[in-house]
Length: 483
Image 1: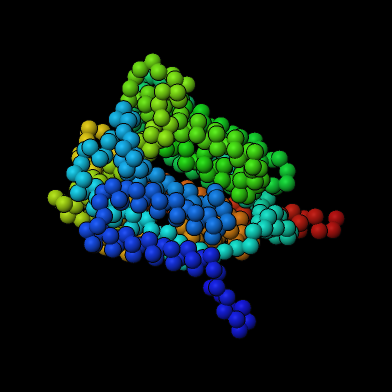
Image 2: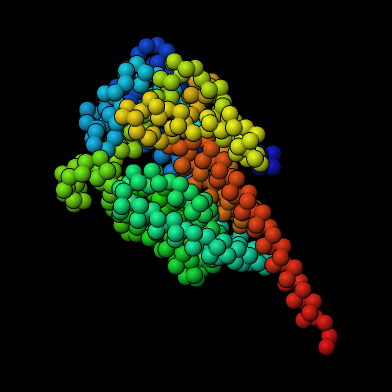
């Protein structure tokens, strides 16, 4: 909605989408409060609901592949994936994931699934409210058209190259150790020997931002971006295959593809079809890697593709993250709510000397650490965005949905309105979106760590820019001095 002179104009598509979301929430609430909804109904509702939400977001943003659409897709698949299998009577492959619906009381699953669906729709509703439509232009090129824009892009590119080269050696050490530890001890060896990787992993955590700075700092009209793009994508694929660490490299891989498609050169339709096929094979490979970790048979990848249902494998594997969400609900029944301790613990990492200042809070910022003792097999769990919300405040945490939606829409708006923001701010927004994608099956502290790293890199960038500008001024003064 906007004012044009004395005329009030309304975005009809956005208005309809908001009304649809309101209707979904009213129908959901009425059926549950009226005891009309069954567990099967909620499972089916979550499937249809996800389709409606993703259609609305893609329609309003006019983008299929965006920060918001991927965030909402991840939220749905990781939390509702096994619910979709349950409603159609498909069996979860227990060799790669917990079968949630056979492990826990259906009443508990019903309650936390209802909470998750409501939260999902509230996030979608407020995203629609906060999102600002932008006129689609060749943003990266247009933003760099002026002399100041060209100078900024050159500065960002140079800084990105320096940061990339500084991090490259420790990252190569990290890659080498990850591969060799996996070869010697298997995937579990990465966690049992995590101390060997700790120092090098710190450098690896900054690496995506360095790559983003180079990709967005390159001239999109030239081919200088190709070497970085193919290196980044190839590294993710190689390490995912050789180490079995899926989540650590799938999200960065999707981020680099997003950077190329959105900022540099959009993929054509034929290319998108091939990417879709490659994506299906990649998801199959992810499930195969997990299968190999749980069932050490002689079944090779192509036999796996033929004998196993790909959809069932993917939803079994990814939807298993809802285990943490259910355990969060169960935890509150016997231990009460954390009352915001995990969020405060996450925010405490921004403080200097936080290990001394707030050690009692930091023990709460990892949801999987709290819930690992309740794991079905005593194994490691992932995190859960909805689980962390519920374990802190229960249904009152639904009040946090507008903040989450605002943060995602703010990132989307900065990326969509590049002309109004510095290139470094755009790069930072892309990097922070990586944190929110991880947050879906991680912890709030993952976002805070990303923000903290961004602040550190910003300080380095400011110093680099200051030194570079002063050097240019000094050189100019020397050249202007008469002999």
